[in-house]
Amino acid sequence: MIVVGEAVRQRELLKWAEDMPLFGTRILVTRSRSQASELVKQIEELGGETYEFPVIETVMPGPERWTETSKALEDLGQYDWVFFTSVNGVEYFFRHLDRLGKDIRALHAARIAAVGPATKEALRRYGIAAEELPSHFQAEGLFEAFDQQLLASQKVLLPVAIWLAPG
Image (cartoon, rainbow, N blue to C red):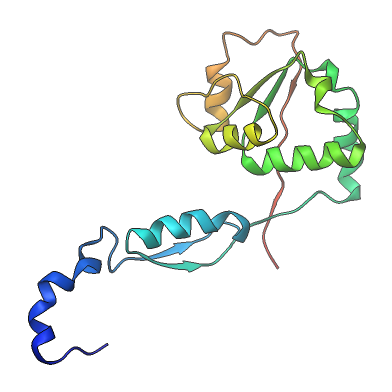
């Protein structure tokens, strides 16, 4: 846009975009497309210019992995803990349960924990309140946070998503 005439004198009043914290910043967002939208929105609201370039993709495991996963989920009542480390882990766990015709009520005695607020919120959408969050949001932090509560005889289920490079 080219501004000419008296309007040029209004520059100081009209330069609101230039005062935004990320104005003039270009940011490459490498998250999967399904997860990038909220981050892209926040960056743009702060004046940044985004470029989406997903370098990972999450997919439901193929039949070659179903046997192993199905065995782990066959008797959900055996687990004392379920640790969720990502939103994708939550989503694929529930998809797999649905495909097997299983019900989350089998985990009624298990304690459920989540890494990070996004994972906790994903569980809440399924009606599950995670017990507590570790002080830092990584899988390693989850085990550190529960170190004093885990017993050697307890069984832990750790559902994770599989990440593949697109292409």
